[in-house]
Every structure is written in C-alpha cells, then in structure tokens.
Amino acid sequence: MRKHLMPEMKEGGVNVTPLIDIIMCLIIFYMLAAKIGVSTGAEKMELPSTLQGTKIEMANTLLLNVRSGPLNDPIVTALVDKEKQELKLIDRSGGKVTEPLLETLKALRAKTPEFKVIIRAEKDLSYRFLEPVLLVCAKADVKNVNFNTAQVQKERIE
Amino acid sequence: MRLRSAKAVHYDSGPNMTPLVDVVMVILIFLMLAGSFGGAEHFLVSNLPLKQTGPGSTVTPKNFVPDTPLEIRVDPRGAGFEAVAGRIRVTDADALRNQLETMLRQFRDAGTEPAKVQVIISPNRSVRYENLIHVYEAALDAGFSKVAFAQSHG
Image (cartoon, rainbow over all chains, first blue to last red; front, top):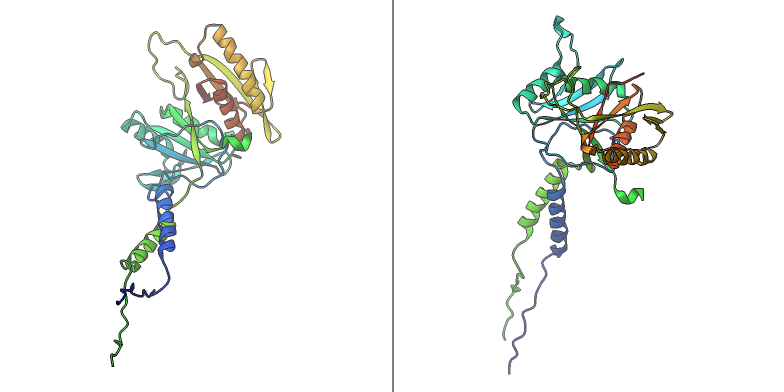
C-alpha cells in the first residue's frame, strides 16, 4: 500500500513572527504613552518637586513659562493663538507703553469666566521674578492660578 | 522510467507578512519621531483671596465675611528657608507641616473651619521658588485648602 506522506515544507526566509510581536508591542506603547500634536506651550525646565498635586483640565487654560530676565523683570512666554509669544509686563517699543501680559489675560478672562493660569517656573527662580506675574494675574481678575510641579513618587521618599 | 518534476513544489504556510511589516515599521518610526514623553507632572491649585483693595480687588457681597487670615512669612536661609507663622519659626517643610497641623486643630477648637482660613504666604523677594512650593505643600498637607501668595517683603 502506498503511504500518503505530508508534503515537505520549505522555509523561504527568516521567521518574522517574533519581530512583528515586538514591533506591535512598541507601537501600542508609543500610541498610549506618547503625546502627539498636543502642545500647551510648556518649555523644558527644572520644576520643583511635590508629593501633593492634582491633574487639571487644560481647556480654558494659559500656561505661562516664567524665567528670570534682565534686572528684576521676568521673561514670560506662552502659547497664544497657537503661536509662542513673549508676553512682556510692560512694552515700551514703538513709543507706546503697553502691557501685553495684562491685556492677554484680560481678553482670555473676558472670553471664559472659568479661565485659569498655570505658572511654570524653574525651581531656582527668585520670588522677585514671580511676584510681578502674580500681580498681573490679580489685576486681570484671574482667581484660579495653578503651579506646575514635578510629581515625586512616594516610594522614593520613604 | 518515471521522471521527477523539475520544479519543486513550494508550500506557503500563511499569508505574506512583508507588506504588514513595512507598514508597521513606518508607523513605529513615525510615533518614535513625533511623540514626546513628558515627565510626570501635576499642579498645585491656588485660589486668590477675595479682597476689596489693591490689585485683584473685587466687589464683595454685602454680608461678605472675609476668611480668617493665617500669614506665613518666608525668608531665605542659605539654600533653604525660614518660615514664621505666629509664634512658630521653622526651617524645614516637615516641621512646618507639623506646626500647621497643630494650628489647624486650634482653629477647629475655636470653631473656625479650615475652609474658612486663608493661608497667605508672604515671601521675601529673594526666596527660591522651590522653597515657596515646599511651604505651599506643607500648608496643603496640614489640611488647609485656601493657600495663596502675597506681596513680598524685604
């Protein structure tokens, strides 16, 4: 009697299954963890670390990056109308005295009463640079001011 | 004589994976280049106090009762700070938190709810932001919910 043998299988190349497995894992990781196309205008800086803190909704929010500037004036930058801008406290260019930061805050506050400000500053910054920004927020009647801090894991402290 | 076929039979064991791998690699490279990872960050929430004078003054209702103020003066001390609130004088955040917890109990005993106490941090102009955040966090940790910064002194 003639036996029916299984046909001989010929491998044409390398086995790519493990490669696909790993790549799919990497894609899922990047899709979940990476932030794409979301810009809040946050600049890279060394933030103070805290255990306390909450997550807040970024809607109706203006993130102010505060850095030390010449003399006692801070340099404040923010993403306004999808464009990174320096918002001076007092601008004397063009023979006119304007207050870009105050005007921007007032305009945004007028649009939405729930408007809030997020302050983002280097941990070594002196209060003399932060104070004028807080005063402008108060002048613009922005009551909700939040401070961006780096999250510390509890285990690291214990 | 029987001749064997010159062409060996090739059996494919599954679908062709090459286009899938190409597309997946393109997506992976795109995500790696376009994505950014921020460190874990969060926010300390503050509410500026209602007041009738100075910057940020607001028109308050007729029967408005202002919150009980608790001022914490913060001065620089080397790389750290010195915080003074009433009779307490401390130089680190843990000690400050413990003292503020005691003060909170005293407020409760006196019939003042913590939500009706406005903690006002009054820093020196040269205090580092990091130290102010530590004072701020100590006040929140102690159980006060209304914390804000005041104009500097010194």
